[in-house]
Image 1 (cartoon, rainbow, N blue to C red):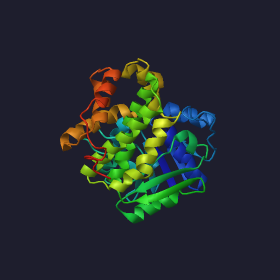
Image 2: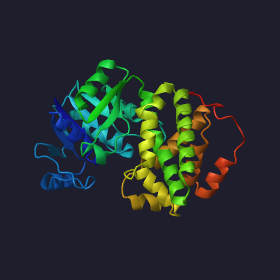
Image 3: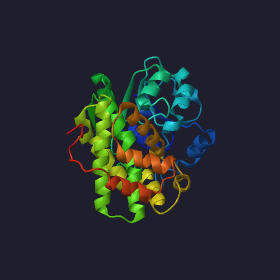
Image 4: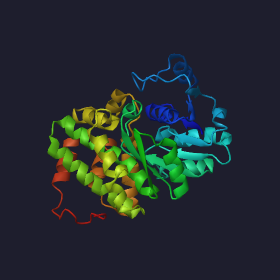
Length: 332
């Protein structure tokens, strides 16, 4: 199968390598001509140090290059996904299958990434998500993900395209839960990083991760997701890896905030898109809209957008009214 990956960041490049290893004729598209030409020349992507790009991986910057590819993976940052989809949409094959691998919620519209891709391309869209740092996938380190679509045949097509002896793919019909788990774990990872940066221990991180997952699932169920999704790869799996990994940009940004840097200073120091920053605002807007209690998400919003000191936020979380652990859990 001919496959195109739209977005040449670390994740897009790693998935292009995954498809290439599976024998698919693969194109990696970059919005930047300069970056595309640099990768073509050096056979490297600065986002993935030490990973060589095979000569048979096609690299392009012209949006017309996506034509003729029945499988198209959308892998650009959430803040650019709508504009990039508009750029490539006129050149997509009529029956092209699209796979959204971007994790986030659009500010304002509060749409999930697959909804934006469908809105801009008028094509059927599946989702590929799970605990999958690009740095490890690119090096063929064993990984498992979820291909989600309400169309079982489409989910299985994506499963077949990516499945290998080092990249296992499960199918799911729960697109909402799969996308929310992937988007909102970035916010919790920021919080876990803040805790690490403040010098707190494993107890605090475990608290934030566990109660954070409860909040994510509570919102998901309110939006129509299946509660069991949050106990799987797209939920707790993705949360664990993002809150604990050295590769996590969201955790790294949080650590810097915990050490005293402002959100803007932390993101500049990370030097790459920190999806949790944007997701925090959208998640809090969704929580207010649906009347869902999400104190950790609200705390992240206050620290990121209202300049509330992170120590004050943490204290306010610990001093909330007493309650039973499963009270209003919504998914247990």
